Amino acid sequence: MKTKITYLLLIISTIIVGFQSCKDDKVDGAVFSLSIDGLESTSITFGYGQTFVMAKLYSNTGWSLSSDQPWCTLSNVSGDPTDEQYIKIAVERNTTDAGRTATITMNAGGNIRQYTVTQTSKNAETYPVGMEKDAIETIKSIQMGINLGNTLEATGGEEAWGAPHTTQAIIDQMKAWGFNAIRVPCSWNQYLEADGITIKPDWMNRVKEVVDYCMNADMYTIINIHWDGGWMEGSCDASMMTSDSIARVEAKVYKLWTQIATTFRDYDGRLLFAGANEPVVESREDMAVLNRYEQAFVHAVRRTGGNNLYRNLVIQGPRTDINRTDMWMELPEDTVSARTIVEVHYYDPFNFCLNDDLSSCTYFWGEPYAQYGQIDDGWQELHVCEQFEKMKKKFVDKGIPLVLGEYSAMYRTHPVDSLQEVCHESEGYFTGYVTEQAKNNGLAPFLWDIQNGGLFDRSTGTILLPTVYNQLKEGAERGQYPY
Image (tube, rainbow, N blue to C red; front, side):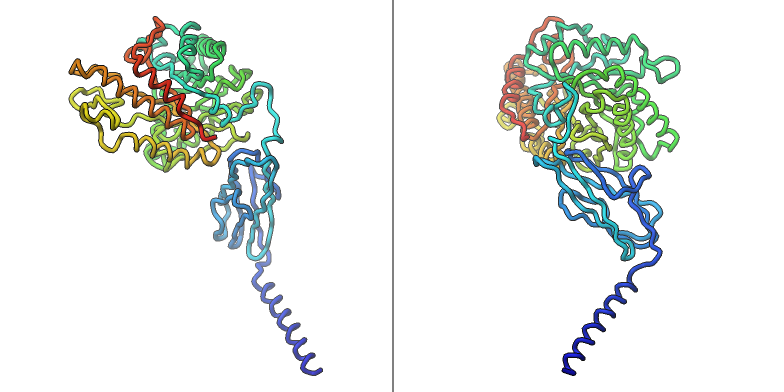
């Protein structure tokens, strides 16, 4: 009996010591919080799309965070006492038919607080008529896209770079050629009132007229702020910009998009907005500057209300370059689920796609055409697949689709007449191959085309290079989106 009593006392003593030890480890007077937009809440709700929110963490003692679900991730899980640290709480796209819940646990000096993260299913959300398609469903609906290049973005006016005045007949012809989507690059800065922020009514009405042509032809349509003299796209250099100069550009982005979005607020989901074109970003620090402009774009559009609360928005990668986008791209926050599309461009290799120096350009692309002349080693079929696979892994596999906003070969006159037709065959092979692989990896293809030096003559409604056009269509038909 004595042995049993001694053993029982030993157990009780051990429990008391253990409890006292835990109590000693716990920091009394710990003050800590996790807040969003200045408000702390123990519950966070997301829509069904892949998205995130930035939460402000405060703690007067060391802290740690954990999530009990793999689809809900945290950008940082522990740290020292801090007055202000931001934690990115991200959720993957919910592909199930039901909502789901995760728990985030915060431990600050032994003091525990839990936050419930709820993500709805797609079935839980309703949208206005015409706005039902989210980003993936919209991209899946695009068979083949084209640019109305060198037209509404032209410095000096719509026809200044050789394009004819855009008419309903021109847009209808593009639809007849098999394109069911059109990207309409737009300039705005040269059409501002003296105050530097108000878009002239005549220009807004002209853009609206062209967009209406596209809507009448039942085409998915993207309008953007193109290069536009570089007032925004050339203002991303973190080493040169000051906080004041960044804020001025940010404010202008917001004001211009407020006007554009208000004008097109009642248009249905066939109309998409793109914030920029090819913003000049050369580092992760520059990307942080661009992210402010892109965030201003998203906020401006959403705050105009109506259908713009649900409109699909296209966000440009740094320089719309695939490698930079893979390394540095950070998406802005959005208030709606699954309505974000990323944009990149493809002009590889330079010597085949863009180089107009006849002494250094290449006339052929693709392994089948290496027998006819020099090709750029390392920039052929495998390179296309590798580049697009980067975008699939970084975005598409997480539920974010892309547009390949621009791509094309340069259509050349070969110095040897007997090689001219095979030269165009190679250009067509490139165009068809890129189109096919873009779709296979989740990127909707938009061919870059202009009036002079392009694939089509808008004035006469004729196809200038049938060999290239036929391979383009075949590539679009072979390509299958992975959604």
